[in-house]
Image 1: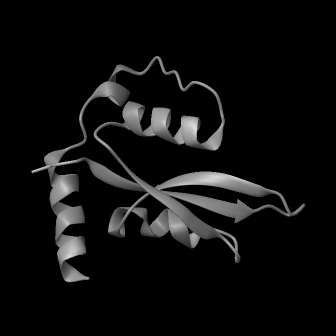
Image 2: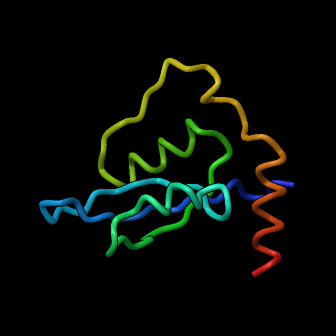
Length: 95
């Protein structure tokens, strides 16, 4: 089902002092709550595919220049649930 991976968005969100801070949010309905927290003026600048939290954070950290992502949480290496891909695919088909 997951031909390429689960889609993630990278946003730049303005801080109170005018700095643009990156954030990584799930594409589609799963990311709605996080996107609602974005400050006015936030913009989505990039989409990417990943198949686990660890892979997503590695890609996000590299893109954002945050260094190397590490974790001691074994579950971060587990593939995302198939239900996430199905929900995202259904959302894409509804657009």
